[in-house]
Image 1 (cartoon, rainbow, N blue to C red):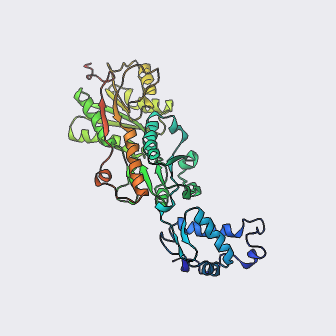
Image 2: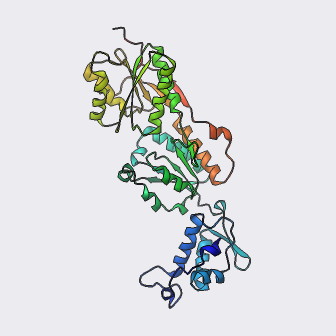
Image 3: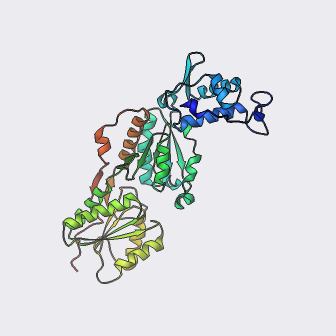
Length: 384
């Protein structure tokens, strides 16, 4: 394969005039450019793992450079662990397990994730097992503006040779770009639908969580229920709705109204969405917040309408996290074990890196909700 790839000369001969390794017209030394050409073909998988390299003289002939230049380039790649073997006995492209960097990347959509208590639990669940396995964890924060523009071409700028694998926690990343990453190193994409394609995914069972919330509210006599979440294109939001709708399809008379906004912390957006269903005579008697971020805004909204929780309207939140001091009422919550989800992602990634089989029960299962924690924010449907 390498013989065919390097059939033509890579550099004009006038670039290599003079001392080998000298810079020409301000460019890097020639051997570093030869090394980069070989390095890129190894990274891209064009040159297969375990493939034997031609001799330095043969490589030099095909690349249009001196044997000394090739020798220096090969030594550079040997220091990086990309090539193994000795001169005279043959050199080979090292397998990924033989050239481990012991560093794993975690790709995030926004730096705000570090302040989000749910995401912090998930990141802790990812990081702890990886560190226990000997890996250093490096966080990469996506450029939010460009991600919102659906322009993920900047992902190509990441030096993937620095990492043994990657956990993608950015659902806004383009699927095609994550596919491209997965062709170059092991990747686990969290909270995305990956069934039927080449990507390995770990997902929390949001459908089960939505079903739990609907069952609980129905048991209290509620028949008109609102689901409020952010990001209609986000798999987790879709699955929350799907879970509640699943209950509605099974039980006639139970109605779910889905309100979806673009930003969970935008007070005006939330108010306008809630006005559409809570202003009028036939208002719902319960609300499910698909993210804990909504709770302070929702409670403020109901307070302004003169509606008491849970006497007039029941409230269910998502994720059992510490709420701000303004939220004094203990909340009924769908509790997701975020740390456990992160741990499964790390377990899968480690096996992918080491090219070990992954147990079928891990591949076939989703991370289940820890359950429903019933507190004081839900009650029997008001009789009036």
